[in-house]
Amino acid sequence: MTALPKVRATINYTVDNGIPPDYYFYEPDPSIKLNPPGTDLREVDIHDAWSLRGSLSADREGFELHDFTDRFEQFDDDSAIHKVFYPQVVEFVKRHTGARRVEVFDHTIRKRLPSDLKQQTEVQRPAVMLVHSDYTPASGPQRVRDIVPDDAEELLQRRVAFFNVWKPLYRRVDELPLAMCDSRTEQPGDLLRMALKYRERTGEIYVMRYSSRHVWYYFPHMEAHHALILKTYDSETDGRARFMGHTAFEHPDTPAGALKRESIEVRTMAFFE
Image (cartoon, rainbow, N blue to C red; front, side, top):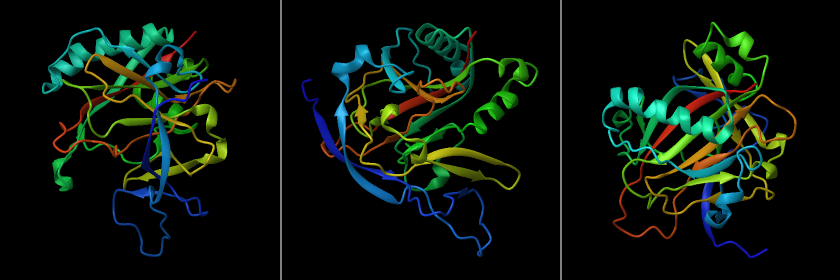
């Protein structure tokens, strides 16, 4: 097999030291021992995946890339995103996964924002520079119950999978690309449960500890008509990808003055027969 072009870059893993890497959205009790996520910085090879585009599978590697042929440019209009773009995403996910029903439950527009955290909102946030996967075996089903409570128990009797659709907004991505870890190179012990602690509730995601087995990929210079499908949860335990670590990263060859990355990530849950 011909070696793929690659870049050497630093990504942020989480230390596995026996202390839960919980993340608090408030000031915790001083007696609590903290293990902040993303403090284990590792330099890794990240392979250019363009030549593999036609063979990648969300059920095997945990991600795939396709052309997003529907036109939409009203990303500054939240109402239009919900009314026009969400249905486009639903059809896109159905077409490429074979799901019989797809529900979009939220989206985030990612931009490089000033360091002042007051700049971020519920839907406009900076890129996530942390190796993570969005759901766990507990938080996935709970999200179904939260979003479609009337149908949840029936739907959870069959296969449920969560897919994020990630794409540039208006122009190609020249900085802060997204890196994906081949799910086949992840071991269950690499996934560390991280509680997201709010005062009124607790959620959870996975962060990841470093392993030399991990194989990383990215698609340099994605254009606005490209879209990634990222699998972040699958209820099936039959050997297909269930969780997939991913992170934004600083590309060492990004030229000075490169256009700032603007992307959207739409979260969906897909239901199968």
